[in-house]
Length: 119
Image (cartoon, rainbow, N blue to C red; front, top):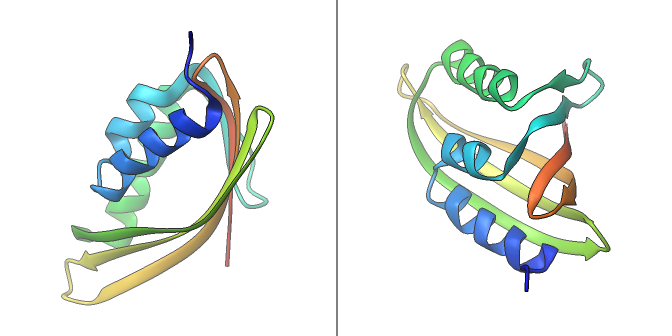
């Protein structure tokens, strides 16, 4: 019997809480996943999503992961939602926190579409 969306989501969030964002993408993104940051154009493909995350880290100058805090989690059918706060230390010594809400569509235990809403 396959895991429920809720169980798979909780497993994935555990990995993210450890700061293993790229590992989470590699494990849970479908090869043809569609990801989208706010109103930016969607990105298609697992590798493209991983590269976008790497570029983001490089652009803001992430030196170290501090924490990934999960707030409210909701699941409806094959769609999940959660809010989170990512805190990182930058190369310049500053620590910043980034808040977002994530909407995820699942199919057979993999993410097929994910959109990030943040300010």
